Image 1: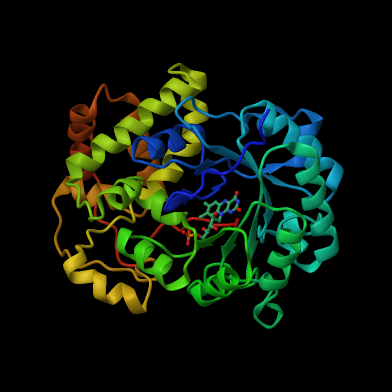
Image 2 (image 1 turned 90 degrees about the horizontal axis):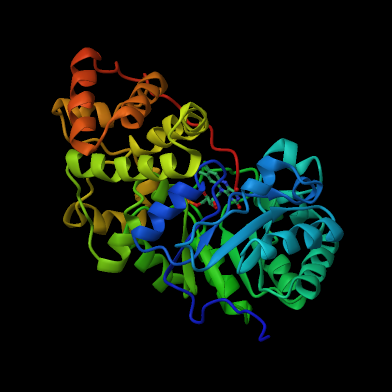
Length: 376
Ligand SMILES: Cc1cc2nc3c(=O)[nH]c(=O)nc-3n(C[C@H](O)[C@H](O)[C@H](O)COP(=O)(O)O)c2cc1C
């Protein structure tokens, strides 16, 4: 059998691995909007090998995902290889090693961003995966541990030498989390130095930012994270090369489709509802951040500062449906999720959301539900 390869060339954009967000129904929605490479949420290699049901569930793909990669977190070559094999048996076309997750629980166990500080161990893991898996192995890095320890160029070289098929750089350090804009200059440097495809990642919210970051850096592809969580139709904008400014009703149709995928995946009964209720309110915490950003107003501005880093709200008084969809409060997200779950179709959801809006006082300034963003 020929050795599987990554698509060559890579598509313009790739869906990022997103813990909690990159669940199967959400990825299915992204494929419908044009995503051609999708990735699993990060799975702990050791737990996968031990047969943990929750961890194994992360390896499942939807039939529509034609190039699906599984991302694993590992600190040892044997775990990475054993988990990678299980992922491949489950249909993964490639396996990605997480080398950027900043959360304490992951780094203290020698995984994620810690590997940036253990280059020799990282190289051994990648080499073992390349030899043992028979599918392309990719690595997702951050820039370094902290600003005075930027070592992604060195790490990328080690990964290439170990046989990695591609590298993604989320161009921020472990310590920066999301506080600073991603450093696309560093993506450019990796592109210049490496022979394998480099995927750039960080702060892309619009199709024109994807186009510009790719042109500036020369990267093979752009990976999209929060932009897609806010607007899953970002892939459509990229295919059509124009911003889509959906009405509130059109957004409700998209969210209703997502909920229908959840119902199909988790089950329409009480058990399925309970499972979906773990994800849905959380997703509405991202959907509520959408703002209309016509490119005539924002394209120039986005060249110097990423739109993701700006909170724009220029619309003044909003109609009830629009207001409730943008409400930042967690309790409102729970109510919205409940409405979508019960609604028979998008029209029924709109009517129920309007009633919810009438019954819900507008949030007072600063009353915003914050979403914990841990990984990456
Ligand atoms: C909710 C959430 C979950 C994430 N989970 C993962 C993950 O499991 N693995 C990973 O490598 N990165 C993860 N990341 C990081 C993203 O893949 C991406 O690198 C980061 O968000 C930067 O891209 P963006 O600016 O387009 O969001 C996560 C990010 C978010 C917001």
